[in-house]
Amino acid sequence: MRLPGRGAPVDWLIVGLGNPGSEYARTRHNIGFEVADALIERWGLSKPQSKYSGLFTQGRTSPGGRRVAVLLPQTYMNDAGRSVGPARGALKLELDQVLVIHDEIDLPFGEIRVKTGGGVAGHNGLKSIRQALGSADFTRVRVGVGRPPTTDPDLVAAYVLSRFREPKEEVRDLVVRAANITEDVIREGILET
Image (cartoon, rainbow, N blue to C red):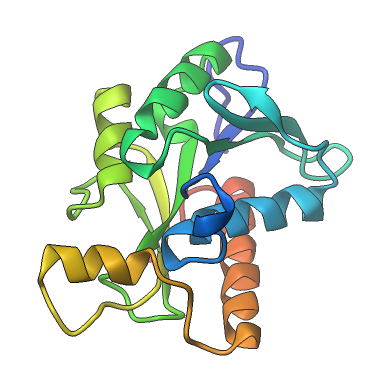
């Protein structure tokens, strides 16, 4: 059973990664935003408000359930730490109470893995968060979006910033499954896969 940080108003800070702006909506890089939005709706949390350079809301997962805060940084992906660091500090949370949901090109589309700590595999959003938190020892829900058949950085960037080509039903299913796994982690503790 996990214990909240001393004086912490919530048990978990859940961060959905993405880029702000309608031009990035429904792109592979914004899957973290989509999962976070699904959780906000599922838990009946209030509409996120501007706070910590992001959109922020908090509440409970259910009556008597876990106390959660959900943050969608509005700093652009590469500077997400500028939002996550102050939120974590204000909420007085330990690193193991921070969970980041993000796109993962090193996993095939549809695969979801949970990981705590370790490298950030070139993901600039995770690099920024690691720098802001002083460590990579936070939990990640890695949502597989697939990888293009190239290592060219410009083509990889274009790929993650493109919209899904998979059927909408499969993308919706991926979001639901990632939300379910996130709920399992905050309810049961770390379930590394």
